[in-house]
Length: 260
Length: 260
DNA sequence: TAGTGGTCTAGACCACAAC
DNA sequence: TTGTGGTCTAGACCACTAA
Image 1 (cartoon, each protein chain N blue to C red):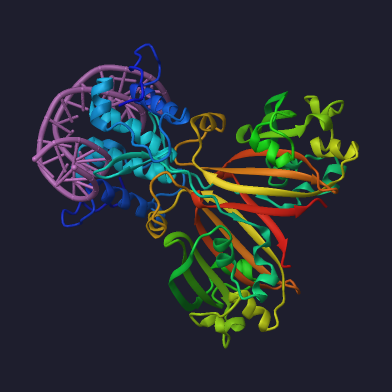
Image 2: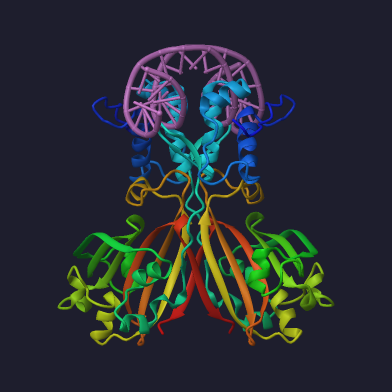
């Protein structure tokens, strides 16, 4: 290995595995190991530091949990590539884009040069859960139409989204069809006479559940952002709740708001 | 242990440690183990499943990385308590609050019944980095005043914040003092004639660096939210950049924006 | 086939918490 | 003192990747 890694220091109060992790972290920080570069293999670390393999593995485990590196079975451990950042302006739900037939996700993706895609689409009707009912101003158990789908950028899954629309608003419109038509759900709601007034987004971050890790093909150490958006019409009625889970490394959310 | 955990199934294609992790996860999901409850100890898992201790530990490692449980040395492993959620409205920078002498953080904290606090405050002057210079519309190396502090809720650190203000705006004002006075930095900027027009926030999520883990006293499996806010005056000039790192489990950010 | 990471065993000693 | 998790050793076999 070309990078120089000091030996384990017995005077150092940190346990050996942390010292090894720190040395690797430092090599990455200094650029001696750049994005995509391969770390020393476990056996190389064992030889270099004179530790057991489990000790070397634990150092690498630390870096994985930090999201700094990713392991590829049979190939090695690699410095995570710098993610391509995508910016989602608060402008993304602008009516003028709907008028041009663009849904929010397609617009964003194309703006940064990705090919957008959707799969695993399902449309069902079910009773509202308490969380959804509260946001929509319904009673628990009232019927809602549920649109569940996964968004792709260049074929890679980056976001899952579940929309809940009061069934009485959605029935008889293209909202219950697979293809909602140009401009998506929001355009159909406006067609039906519910002019959109404003949106509220609640943003949180956490580690993914195993299901979410599978759906978004996330490696260890990548958190998700949960964004729950409620859409209101100009009368203040909530007309849609959209619960999205995004692979955090693929997103930067941007919000612009006035000083009042 | 009172909870029932099935034995490891050799027919199951998942490795034993994942089966054990899944059984514990399921017990938590079903409420057999509630927030704050103690998981079976490592030796209990070893006895129950007939595996080596490292195998039981790996199962627990999975749950820690998920943020589901936290280990306490010498006491046991516990289901993470449900975090108290705090909502930060887009309203938080409303002028009427500044007029009443409240800074944004104090307002939020008090609204949800926390005692706010600030520590590790430092005020320095230094050349702007490229990231800060770009957002402030300065040249790299132009002088900026840097206010670095850590916010506490009930004595627990929940957020670090670093503000950058063009030095020519800050010099001679209370912005360079430890105590910026009622209403904080934004009130002083308005005193100096820079009426605030709007804010832009960029929100991202990732795993913390070791430094951030220390500063926010984060246990493993807790991501951070990075929020970079740029404040503009009514002429469109950027007057401050504030780079915050928040413990993700303590925050839900709320944004309200119009459909345009 | 050789090298890599993934999983596992059966021990060991240590630091910390609680009784 | 007992039980807990934290760290470590020195092996083993397996699955995956690439030559």
